Amino acid sequence: MYAIGHILKEIREESGYPLQEVQQCVDIDLTQLCRIENGKRLPTIEQLQKLANFYNYDYKFLMVHRESDKIACSFEYPEFAIETLKVAEDKVKYGTQYLSLFQNTIYQKPISLESRRYIGSKSKLTEWIMNLIDMETENVNTFVDIFAGTASVSNQAIPKYNQVIINDILYSNNIIYKGFFKAGEWNEEKLNNIITNYNTLDPDTLEENYFSQNFGGKFYEHNIAKSIGYIRQKIEDMKSELTEKEYNILLATLIYNIDKLANTVGHFDAYIKRPIKSQPLRLRLINAQDFDNVEIYRKDANLLARELKSDLVYIDPPYNSRQYCRFYHLYETLVKWNKPKLFGVALKPVPENMSTYCTVKARDSFEDLVYNLKTKFLVVSYNNTYHSKSNSSENKIRLEEIESILKKCGKTKVFECSHRFFNTGKTEFDDHKELLFITEVDEKRKSKSFPTVLRW
Image 1 (cartoon, one colour):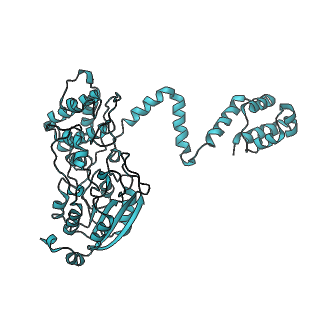
Image 2 (image 1 turned 135 degrees about the horizontal axis):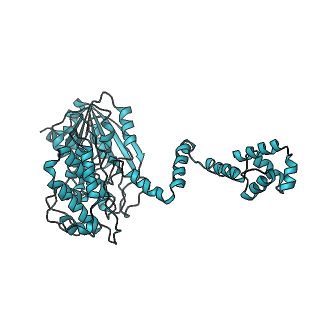
Image 3 (image 1 turned 180 degrees about the vertical axis):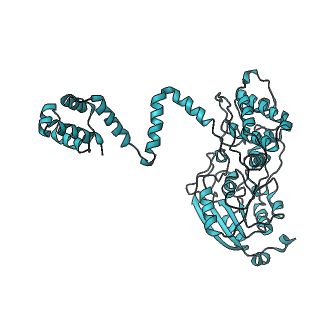
């Protein structure tokens, strides 16, 4: 409904003109005039000029109302209208300067945990997972995320449970968890000053370093690589001047800021063989928090299972032969900063922390894990990527095997959600689903159901 028509009708009636007389004088079809005054049609600019002249009324005033009608009636989401109009006002007011103002605003905001690219990330599934856990479990105080990955599930669990245990075997993920979650002393102003200093670096004045010599022009544009290597060494040099929390925040900040600058499809198994666009490295701090109810480990999940006692364990193991320590070797090298000898086209160090869940031993490892976990509930994420043209994409455990093993532990429910999967172009799979298994553990059933060898 257009308001300009009602305004024109008020002006006409106040002036004492019948509609037919206006139609004859301005040469606008009577039906069109009726529709305009009833708010069903927006007058054209030519029609509005004629009416403004005939009524001897302020044309600018009428045009403003016509344009505002166009804007108001164009909103696809009316609930955002007021905020949208304020932003539009700023864009008109500042013109081309608006983008720089926007960038300054963005760079004042800390980086969220979920903004990282990571294979198998559950950030888009977390709400679905947590809602199901809420509905299907009870009396949960201790929550364990034993293959935490990006820790997006842990992030949602922290405010809900008395104790949250976060574990992953990668050094880089461990540093990230400590930066985002671990309680500890840190000075935000101090870290912002350090970051500001790094943001003023001129890469042309920096010397070549381990990072630029190995990864420059491949995984990163060369000047970006020089800056990364220089900053990483500076963080190490000033470690004695930093608290443990500050050190972890700076390393996690470096990882998160260089993540989207990488010349890759989201991992470091290979780099894209094309010229790399030159762009500045501008750092923002991560959204670091302090939580007293969080414990962080970097252990083999199957070994940690023998040490823990909890109410719920969330299990999101590797699904296929892609080893995470190899996919994210660059971040492992960057965090450890032991400057190892690198091998192959992808410049990987000697393998370490290789997961049996990426091998033919995956089923046996999973069975060993769930048997040794002392918990009330088991919650397992897995997907159904079986029809792959790439052997590396094929699941190492069948869904039927997972369900069979979990049923040995207790009553098991299975839930599914359509979900887009990681694809390098070799896999055609139209019905990809994420599945969630929730098992209420029955210790008597579990002790009787598993092979004797697992009880040793």
